[in-house]
Length: 266
Image 1 (cartoon, rainbow, N blue to C red):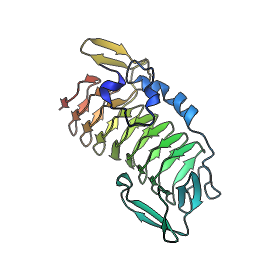
Image 2: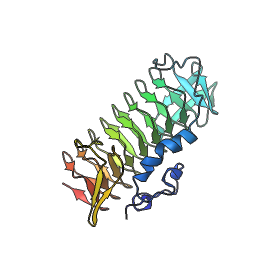
Image 3: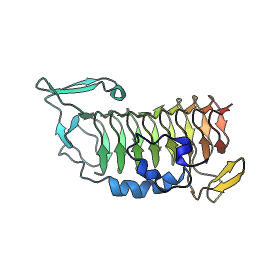
Image 4: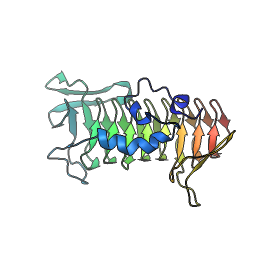
C-alpha cells in the first residue's frame, strides 16, 4: 500500500532506480544521495562559469558541452512544451539548453538534459539532475541532491533540498520542498510549504489506518502521488503522504500521515 508503485507510475521516469529494492515510498529518499553520487559526475564547466559567482553572459548546453551564446538567437518559449528554441547562423540547435546570465552554480556535478531553461537569479548547488525540457525559474534555489525529471518546473523563489520531482511535476511559485517527493504531474499551488522537521527529537513516524510506521528519517517532508495537487498557501506536516489525485485545499494544513488516493483535505 505504501510502496512506490502505489503512488507513482515509474514507467517513463529515467531515474526509477532510486526506488529499486525499497519497501516504502520514502525509502527513495534514503537512496537519493547514493544514487546521485553514483550517477552525477563533473565537470560541468566553462571559462565564464565561476564557482559561486553569477554568470556574466548566457551559456548554451548542446551536444554535452557548455558553449558561448553570443552568436545564438534564442526564443524563450515554454521549455516544458518544447518551445525553447536556439539557432546559430540560421540553423536550429536541436535539444539545446539555455543558462541565462545571472545564474549561480556551485560545484561541477550538474547533469543537464535537453531543452532546459535556467533563468537569471537561480542558484544551483551540486549535485543536481535536471531532466529534459524542465524550467528552473528566476530566484529558484536548489540546495543539493535535487533530482528533477522531465518537463518539470521549479518556480520563482521556490526552494528545493534533497528532493525528487517525477516527470511533469510543478512547484511554480514561492514553495518550499525539503526531503520530499512530487509524483508525476503533481502541482503545488503558490506558497505551498512542506515542513520536514519535527519540533521533538527522533525520526518522523507515518500514521496509517493500521498503525504507525517509523520512517527512520529525522527529516521527512511530504510525498504527493501522481496528479495530486495543493492549493495556495497550504502546509504539510512532516511525514505527510497524499495518494494519487489527492487534493490539499488552499490555506489548509495537512495532518501528518497517509491520506489515500483521491482524498480531499479541507
